[in-house]
Image 1 (cartoon, one colour):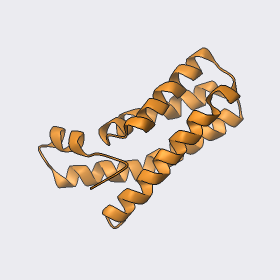
Image 2: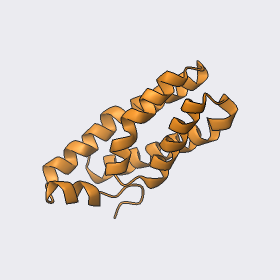
Image 3: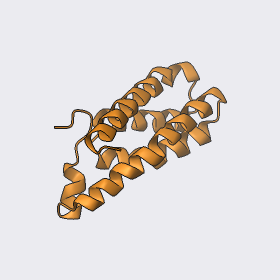
Image 4: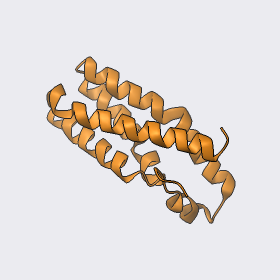
Amino acid sequence: MALHYNLSKVYAISDNDQDFAKQIITLFIDEVPAEVKNIREGLEDKDHKRVYQAAHKIKPTLDLLGMELAYDDVLAIEKWTKAEGRRKEIKDVVKSLRGHVENTLKEVKKNYNL
């Protein structure tokens, strides 16, 4: 049983298609860590637009994978970018997002032998 993600939404929309689930997992592995890096770099550069675009891009994948805490982090990041907040206000949320993504990444790689 997965601790950091939940594929129930993926199976619900795909009629329990295992291949589709693996495609979503692959999408997560290929795109989400890179976008989290974009969020971190955009934060360092005080580039609210870059942070927003990266957060917005990964939001559907996090939702599909049932990563509720990471999804909540992304919503907070998007809200912060719209308000053009200060870095210190969102730093802990970005750190939290990164941790959730790293934990899920380790788990899916192990569970799917990737």
